[in-house]
Image 1 (cartoon, rainbow, N blue to C red):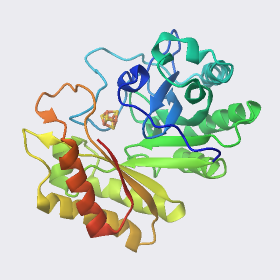
Image 2 (cartoon, rainbow, N blue to C red):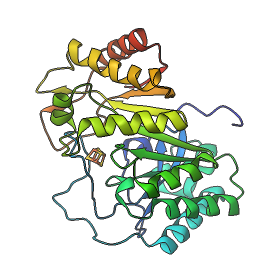
Image 3 (cartoon, helix red, strand yellow):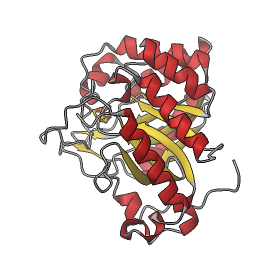
Image 4 (cartoon, rainbow, N blue to C red):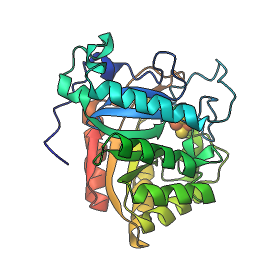
Length: 293
Ligand code: SF4
């Protein structure tokens, strides 16, 4: 896709500040993302903060109630169109949060990502949300911009989500699916979800059989303890179960806590610790692993 992206620096204000808010907008917000390698426009489909996980590292402050409301598709469309045109015309580059970034990075929309304050697949009309994004990207002539779904995978078996994924497949879609554990017990410790782990795994296998997926895994210390060797082996086995049943994993994103989280006992890994884990995943699975220390 075009020229190589510039290096994304951890010290840039917009990289440090990943606030999912933008002026008086409800759904749409800009971030400079290391994983997107540039400007990513997020669409928060969960201003109500609804999520079926309760990850120990979640940055969403649920003590402050969300806005309970259905997603207003017309407003999503208007906010997205305005922000894309604002970025393309150089307006974003002039805003204080983005002035320390090379201007070219703020003008090129690398992806539009369904992300935000909860789990995007929990909404009832995911497919029509995808349609809106496709329409706006076409209107803006963005024929290379990806459409990304960042998901905990619990809803990948829903009919509306499957329809949305098919539309994403036809429009440069990418699925970034969370997998932080290898065992049910560690899944309960880190993701604290009532959803059964085997449903998550089945959804990952099924989805990856239809198109390649990216696995996103956050590694951390829980009460000072890094993931055990046994758990890491279990995790690698889960990845291999996806591939040996016909699924494709294009890459694994291994990252750690980057910003303060509400649970003080959930802490980040040192870069060398993350590298050691990533090396072991490469050795055991043969998959491409990209590190985000
Ligand atoms: S899946 Fe995402 S939004 Fe939900 S609790 Fe985990 S980190 Fe937070």
